[in-house]
Image 1: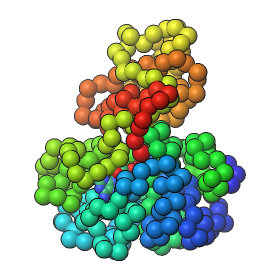
Image 2: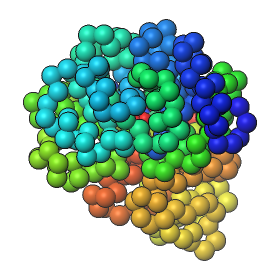
Image 3: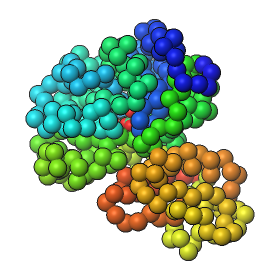
Image 4: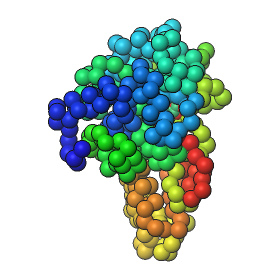
Length: 320
Ligand code: TXA
Ligand code: MG
């Protein structure tokens, strides 16, 4: 599919592919997804095969609107309705008790399902025309950097995914916040740009982040990783040599090679994955990333940088 904004005919082509059980590249406001019919186990298995992702890692089901939440989840707590009302469509995923009809291929055999209503107009157009739920992990091969542009998806999958809808650069730039509402105390499984304070303002205090069950492959310690070794450093450690490429805050230090991102969490998150891809392709021996401020608004960015550092390198064994 050519490099241009989708027309109604492109949306029809994409929906026809989904109905045949194929996977497509779909823009969302967070990152691009590799989307397939969540009610079709064969289609969902195709996603795992394309990504090279272990089959027991659950996928998020994307819905056209909050009113279909009851088709996929049961025993909805009030907190689910309140968060959906406040943040959907948007970059928030809710983990809820699943309906029996949800295929095990989607949930990794767990008793819960992840649900999200994305805000991106192209995702909305596809979902509304398709009418059902779309399972969509980030459209990268297992363990690699999530795509935030259509060409990143083409780099990852080439001809194996012929339909990639181009929705431009993803506005948010990092994956959705995941809130687990399936247990006694709600808690954040994966931090995102909807922060803890914003969620607590709606539903009250959350439990400790993360924890043991249920599984979330975005919570594997190594993740979102470039192939070049990557370290987080203070600004005065950003080297000015040819072998090191740097990712700086605000401005590139004199004499160093690399990129700078805005010193604001929204702008930084928006540009982060494209910057990591570009730096990874630069041929540098190592990547040095200036550590962002130690502030709650930077939590999700810190989380992705820490995992990128843990997973980086040519032989890294990584997650999602
Ligand atoms: O922003 C996003 O969430 C993007 C876009 C495409 O929507 N999707 C995304 O999907 O990041 P993925 O598969 O790369 O990450 C989804 C995360 C994984 O860590 C997965 O384990 C977790 O959601 N997850 C899904 N269902 C779950 C469940 N029932 N319990 C716990 N974690 C779940
Ligand atoms: Mg992912």
